[in-house]
Every structure is written in structure tokens, then in C-alpha cells.
Length: 109
Image 1: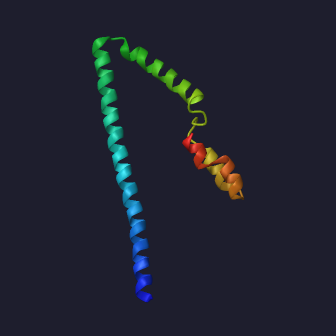
Image 2: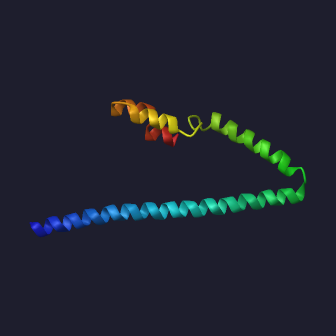
């Protein structure tokens, strides 16, 4: 029985390690995708600047307006950083109250 317990402990330990490694790989992949997307956006911006001199002066305000509209209409609840909401949720005495202020469902909306 002692051997079974040690093997079970080793399995649990390896499962925890695999979760950590999967998270690390996913974080690295997200960073690479973000960098590639940034390079693509910069190349589009540069092509637009070559096409028309006024492009940077119009695209930045229009892009900001589109982002603000999307945040308010499509992605409601995504305004701000969420730090004050998190601090308030951590100060609440019960988990039910915390879930009403800060929950996974709210972050996925």
C-alpha cells in the first residue's frame, strides 16, 4: 500500500508540473502571436503612410473612436483596468459577495 501511495503522490506531482508547463507554453505562444500581430499592424500602418501622408493623422483618432465604441457597446464591462474592483472583492467577507463583484463569467464577457 505504501508503494501505491508514493506512486499516486508522484502522479499528482507530475500532473501539477504538467499544468505549469502547459501554462508556460500557452503564455509563450500568446506572446509570439501578439508580437506577430504587432508586426503585421505596423506594416499595415507603414503601407498606409506611404500611400497617403495624412493617413497617421486620421487613422489614430478613428481607431480610438472604434475601440471606444466597441468597449461600450460590444464588450460592456471591459472598461478600466479592474484593479479597484479586484481590491474591493478581496476585502469582502464572503465568497458569494466576491463572486457578485468579481467572477470568471464577468471576465469572459
